[in-house]
Length: 396
Image 1 (spheres, rainbow, N blue to C red):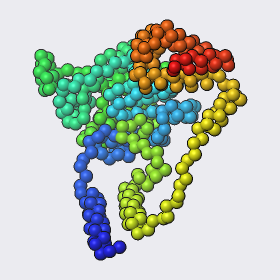
Image 2: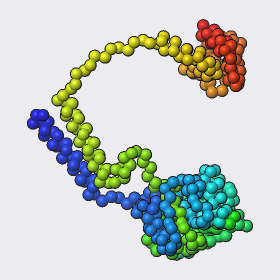
Image 3: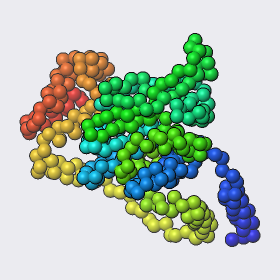
Image 4: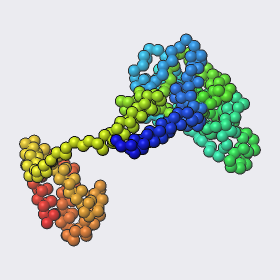
């Protein structure tokens, strides 16, 4: 390496090191993204609440669940009753998860859910409806149990309809329409239910539409009393904390997930890769392996066709062969005549006949035969022969 290359490399490394050092020492901006995970200390994480669970449920086991709700409920000890806590900005349960959650509560357990959406299946079963008013200012929403206004990230999401037979309203949201973004004719403060208890079987659902109240930001702003009162309705039993259905859950499928989750190891890994890349570049400029002579590939199309034909003849899978020939034929129509073959009907036949300048009867005949073969569950050798003849006639 000559002197000029060494100087360029030194300057490059100095700039790279400067960028890395700057990124490490510069203050990080406050992260306001919703997370709700037990490990996040950002404003809308749930680190404070998770650490306080041992005080809210003294003497009880706290299980942090990093698996899907379905797996946890299927594998749990059904002989013991417990509480399940789910807190996130939006929650949506599929049919299997909803069924397991309903069975869990029906058996005498309690479930506390704080979210602005509870999923279609669960909402329909519990006969509840939610409404969100987006025309309000963030700092004008108040919860009945406190006098504090929610200054960030909270909107007026409340229950617009509940099952009055099995439900009990436990809390309200208060909002002054005069302080909204849109002028309102209503002059008095309005209140809407945001916290309800729904009895289901032997257990209860506790549903809260203000998940932000349980985050670090509001737990540290004298809102801990509201959280304690909300959780006081739950049984003094073991607690399952859901850490899976979270907006801030980091999903890394790479085998390097441990290294990438550690800040120091991550930067060491990146710097090693960059250094190795630089080394390869400069090493390649000095040395190069002998380029081997590569013989051109032989044309073995005929042998390949014979092999494939022999396999089909041996297995006599006429159905698979017919489907492949039909798909190849339809692809030919799409790519050459630009017709949609997802649905084959009279319009397809007319358009194809017009573009190919062939009689409509001939086109209709082969398309009808294709539809007939598609609807047959089993096919014979005669079907293959007849289809092949029609396709060959079509291409002439």
